Image 1 (cartoon, rainbow, N blue to C red):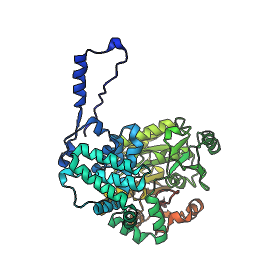
Image 2 (image 1 turned 120 degrees about the vertical axis):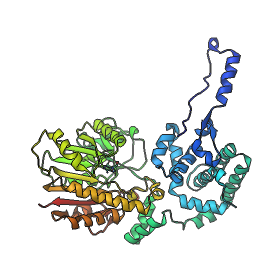
Image 3 (image 1 turned 120 degrees about the horizontal axis):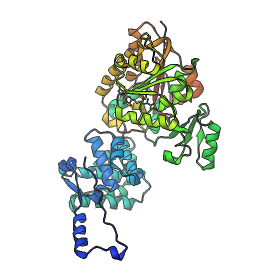
Image 4 (image 1 turned 135 degrees about the vertical axis):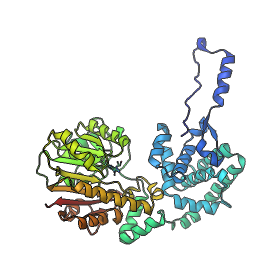
Length: 503
Ligand SMILES: C[S@@+](CC[C@H](N)C(=O)[O-])C[C@H]1O[C@@H](n2cnc3c(N)ncnc32)[C@H](O)[C@@H]1O
């Protein structure tokens, strides 16, 4: 990846320190020629850009959009990698917005463009999409949205391409109402996903879910009750004049209607709260709901960044916790969270498909017990890798990066993880199979295949628990377990199936 260079001309204010004119000139000449190589844009006719352009939020957003759509890279990773903290709000709004509304914006772009851009000018297409997004969805003055995007194109491609962008955006302003009305019919989902949701979700719920999927996601906090009472935390919010809504049935779940940076919320450093979606908060509540053991052995595979690990430890602080994830880099977040919350877990980089390679040894490290049988675990949390179709509102790139083949591949991995983990669960122990997917293929269909293969598993019904905690419009009836879908100020799409070992 090309890196932004960080040279700046410093103003000399102290006359005694003013450099000699020749030196100043030479220095100036050098900095004016400061370029960033953009090898990845060569195919779009851009080999290098001035540092000033590279740090332009519209350029950065276009680069991110290109990386998602052309290179099939993650939106979130690229936003974090490219964008400077001071521009993060604006640039990520542009990039997320375009990726979220892509089919609608493309539809309008096609109406505006007399002919498509040639490959060597194609980067201008991303800039056009940004301009359309700004005019449709951002409050910024329309003329500024036109001017800034046209200027960027001029700097990258010269007058010709800039004139095309200018003509398109001005036409959009003239025909705004008509084009918006026409584009409203365009589905914002890929066809295969739209079909799968259509088949699975009743129309009224589907409409609600789509509305939520295309809106900015809500910010939910979970109060860490081993650190502070919910009441005291709410007082802190009130003192800071931060608006909040407490969930009526899950008292530690707090919704902040206005998104804030976590560090601006009181008590972050002290570990008073964690950011965790409402439905994600159910996982640990479900797994521990009838627990009577003081020091159960809990295994949380696929644990990064540790949202559910830390919740489990908040609920059962004496638990012996093994937290694992295949991704070492992501595990850093688990360490950070455990440290911030002053909690203890044995964190291991491990593949959940092969527990035989690490679970017995890890158990020995934790308990110094060498005399165990294979059945070790009291409570098993399997937050399996999935398509993420339930968190599209947080990661809209999922719509364009996942394919039906991915779902098939993932469902095999999910079944493998479930089967392998099962062997290490104690008789009478519980295992929660959970995903942030709304697709049956990754959820109840995996459980059903599993139930056909083993004769010592029983599904524990969750209907009453869920109905007592979650509003009806978020609940979808499925053959095994519980499927939750995302709603505007509710939680994300999650699936839960609680199993117990009978023999
Ligand atoms: C949905 S996220 C987990 C979220 C986490 N449980 C939480 O609540 O914060 C799924 C995780 O599965 C991990 N993963 C993917 N394949 C895995 C495998 N074969 N074994 C272990 N972890 C895996 C990913 O690295 C990712 O961190």
